[in-house]
Length: 252
Image 1 (cartoon, helix red, strand yellow):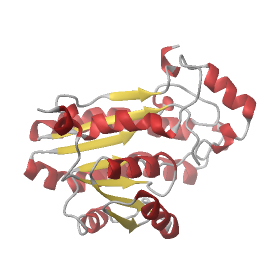
Image 2: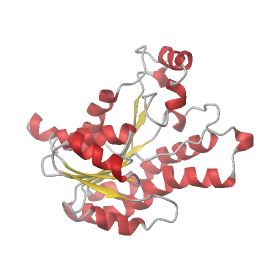
Image 3: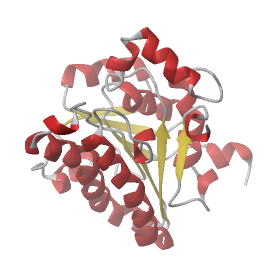
Image 4: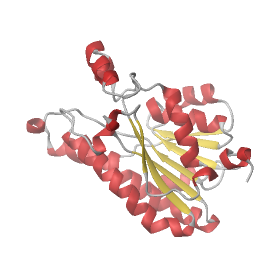
């Protein structure tokens, strides 16, 4: 296979959750540049419209609330309307309430687990049949440093992201023999809405930068190459893996 074909997303349809901000928005915009038709899914209509204006290319906006009681099968069906059934699913929507362990509420715990773990599975489950028919699909979940490391005020978030890592392996076991590969990206510290409290404290941000092997925190462009690899034909024999895009944070 030619190098260009190996990494091309021409003719592919991608659904990106959390596309209105942060890494989800960066991922959605980059997939457009890579040639995919991209459906951005998020709650905020105005933010999605702004993303589409910025991204250009062939895009569609899907405004939906991915809450615990959302009809994910219906959302998946709506996502198939603009360009046909998605070949690629990027589960980037996430929630981190940053509550100390003694202050975690049942409601906060369940909201976190629902959005970070339950929704990605059932959305994938709804989209897999069409991928299976084509014998080609890519599911890219978003894990975290907290999939393997504990941080203060992150017990619910960490539990959900630890679950994402294992869920990714289980998705691979369930679906990869039928052409649907499942992997995860685990970002380090990138400047997003979720990490706003970190970057609002220059000293804290500097400590995290110093904890990497490279010596800096992530920049949005750092996610592009790893994302393209996992979303394209280049990763045909890679499944059930978690790729840490963290500047070597977990290596130290």
